[in-house]
Every structure is written in structure tokens, then in C-alpha cells.
Image (cartoon, rainbow, N blue to C red):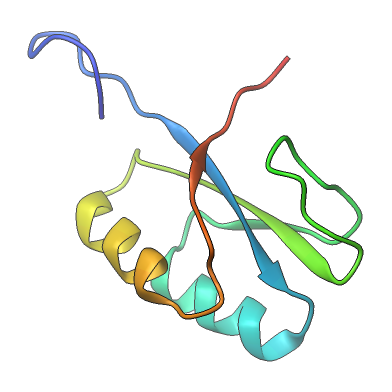
Length: 84
């Protein structure tokens, strides 16, 4: 969440994971907001053997969710997602 205390807003984030059901299932078990895109590269630049994941902070315990995602060995970085 970001913004002034009386006007906090959620933020969307994106990251790449290796292609494969095991990775998809693990991410979804951590982040119920996760949307997996198998053919999109996102601004973050996922490769052909990766899937793009987009989630958001409009959920309870979003800090713990982000920390758990960042701790996954295969998540190199998490960036803010911008939509055009």
C-alpha cells in the first residue's frame, strides 16, 4: 500500500517464474491474487521459458506474501506493475 495514511492505495507487482506446474502451484499457494501469464513477457522481461506473474497488495498480510515470494530461490526480482 502506498500514499497518504488517509488515502492508501494498492499496488500491482510483477515477477517471472520458471515455466512449470510446480512453480505455478507454489506461487498461487503463497499469493491468492497471483495471475499467471504463459505468453506475456511483461515490462520485467520474462524469457520464453518463464511465466509472468502479476499480483497486488489489496489483500490481508500483503507484506508477508511479498516476503515469501521474494524468498523463493527462483524469483530474481519483483517490480511494480504499470498498466497502459
